[in-house]
Length: 202
Ligand code: 5GP
Image (cartoon, rainbow, N blue to C red; front, side):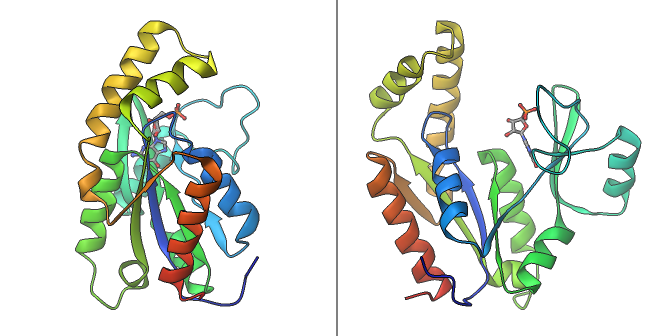
């Protein structure tokens, strides 16, 4: 573990489901105490044991629209009738404290964040620290095998996830870095090496 003060990064990470992105992010957060996970805002109702401020910031539609009008989001989307969005202020705050922020977001959301970052002046800490990473499965066949193997999805859901995955993978070239998750520990090491190099930890 190495938590010495380093260049604050604004890390955007995407992957098709079944590529181990959540596990990799959890591992990073366990080890790198200076990386903070970005909690999205949503207007959907909490599900199961989801907690406000932990899984999401659960907002009313009125409050979300107020924040939208104030340009508080760096990106937002409407999914199944509910708003989802990423606030700018917490990212600025975290980077301002010298820490890094990680965003777990799909390809479309990442494209909006990238566009937003591009529009910023070169001196903006979000632009200076920006990096986007795409997690790839070893192959399409292996991804299918993993989705079948985890046994949580119906065949129809697996087909939908596979179609989504192929669409997302076709856009992996938009990302600055790609990490293939063939073996979890190896992929994690690659990710750590990348983050260490980018943040000047080595
Ligand atoms: P769920 O309601 O199942 O948690 O998420 C539904 C969808 O919203 C998922 O595809 C998830 O990736 C997306 N989502 C979650 N947070 C955000 C966000 O901050 N911005 C955008 N654009 N999409 C999000």
